[in-house]
Length: 284
Image (cartoon, rainbow, N blue to C red; front, side, top):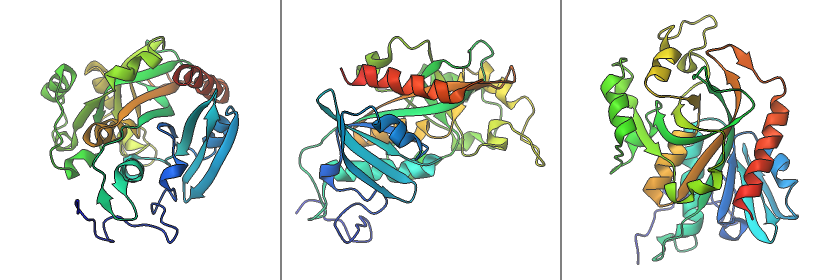
């Protein structure tokens, strides 16, 4: 018996599907597109030649089908790294745990995970309505500190930690980077950059309504430290992918430049362009 899991650790639905995603192993392709918004799932799957699986529970909507003869899945994650924690662990369970026996499989399967999202840029030179691929990412949400054996270091992370001035936030930071061996899918993107993943949309991203943010120069400081853009999921996708032995890439449509105060004139067109651009590259 290999690492038998208690019922409280791997929670399943009555039909044997994983608890939150409501999926069975046969519902999943090895190439998976991750989007935040459930409404974006049919915007992707409408390009499939056929759709075989349509399931949902809570904010997690999944369509699996075929495109140009290859099986592919698109799934919504909702907003934030706490949702990504659910998605990544349950996706891994679907391919690397025997759900009936609740035992780890002896052979590991690696998924290819492609996040499609939207982002804001803190670099004044980045033009809106273009695509930006994340090479390095820093998480400011603290998620990966809950996992044993997580450590990532490269020149970007060392420089960032050395110069990051906000001491009360610093203990939350963790880092990761893209799956370099599949990065050629996106080699012709206009921008490749370094992403900051935040645990919120307002003060964490420097927005101020009735509550003041930490520092009026927060976004400018991040740009000075090499950050190109920011969003709310990639640090968890990249970090958990490395821990679990999967491969992940993020591409975001840049719909805002915060330093220039610009917003896309038609972000729906940017989203459509991104979907078509990605599908042309990951399914030949």
